Image (tube, rainbow, N blue to C red; front, side, top):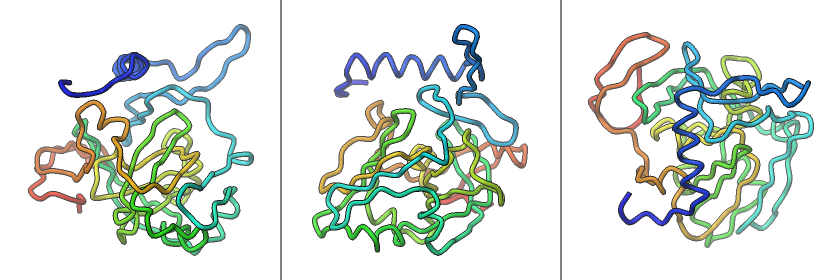
Length: 232
């Protein structure tokens, strides 16, 4: 961790995430009330990861706030976003924990959103903020990659809360921490900064590297020979 500028709050949150990887209950009791929480657990076929436990977002009242360096900042509801031309793709999400899983994602390309909000020339990156307080910085050129998609369906059904509903990002050539879940706000900015996990020494660029992968959906280990999107 040499050279990292971390606040005490960040350090405590990091410890809590490590603990969550061991065990966090799916339900938390507040007095007589039992609330479902979205937490880390190794669900068969596709693991679930959040940096903080959160309650599921109400899809009817959820809004996406888009601002920063753009000509037409707006707040979108899910219905409006679903009016964008729909795209689908089958792609694999690869986690730095050495597992991956594949799904059929449906949603819209970032360029459709850009047409409406009109990023300014000086905008080079987009800052993402999630319901669990996760944040990430992504170059606009990565968002305009033909395989990047804002997803609101998964395997032909509404995107499950545990996998980032109502809206998440999928960037197949990058490790999963760039595919931001449960997005609440995005802002166009002119300079790059470190995302949440980059503060802990992870690559800010995050391109998938050669090595070994455990494909959960195939239940087998596969050697990755080339950097970038996993094609199996």
